[in-house]
Image 1: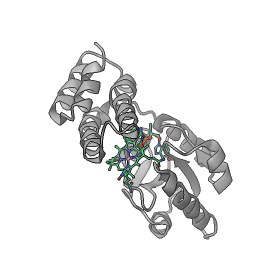
Image 2: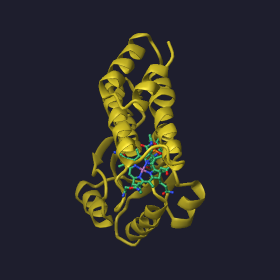
Image 3: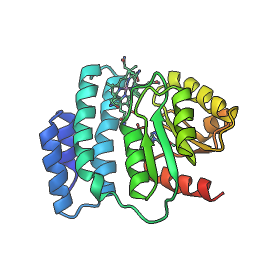
Image 4: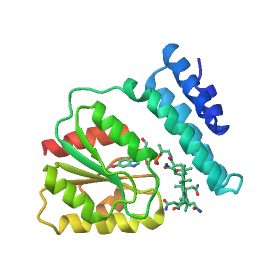
Length: 207
Ligand code: B1M
């Protein structure tokens, strides 16, 4: 069984069909990472491409995002965890940025890997990241940004954390974020995707 039905249902913004297609794929034994990467994320990449060339608009992008979220709810319990994760992670999308699908995915994968996760949601100011980390003695703050404009905010947030008295590592990610950018802003780590984020978090905590 392929993941085409999942992909198609997202492209048609049909939340119920996405849920059904994901359930069918799981029942047919398709690997959860394949469902995620080929079906769910694959469709969102295409939505982004169509938006870039003016074939889709914001309301449609939002409907696709909601359809993807419906699918993510179904797949959440099947994302493979292991017993490697220990520690507390505070995660959020930086101030000015409303994208949360990738951040939610990182959050889910961290939880499945055994980390305790406090998810602050979207549009999160630096002060809120720092207060939450301080109040909960977090090991890592994870920042997500999807817009080139909010990469600046990400840099400012990392700087504020570094200039504070907090003993916490910072990890950054999101489609426009790169390792070079992470180095430039002084983040402790960068990960390309949610799976890599788990491995990196474990390494940072051990270091
Ligand atoms: Co927006 N949007 N959007 N959007 N949107 C992008 C990002 C864009 C690339 C589309 C495009 O032009 N092709 C473009 C940004 C261009 C740029 O900055 N250069 C864009 C734009 C322009 C905008 C608006 C400005 C549009 C407008 O209003 N004119 C507006 C901005 C609103 C704001 O934030 N202030 C806007 C709005 C929206 C919606 C609200 C409609 C919706 C978001 C809904 C939601 O998230 N709840 C939306 C969507 C859906 C997208 C696209 C199509 C899909 C994003 C997504 O969910 N991808 C996106 C195009 C694209 O990226 N292909 C686009 C799937 C997700 C799993 O991937 O988030 O990259 P991603 O996460 C990955 C990795 O990046 C990584 O792990 C995940 C994979 O495992 N990762 C991390 C992410 N965060 C991490 C944190 C970590 C580690 C890894 O911590 C350590």
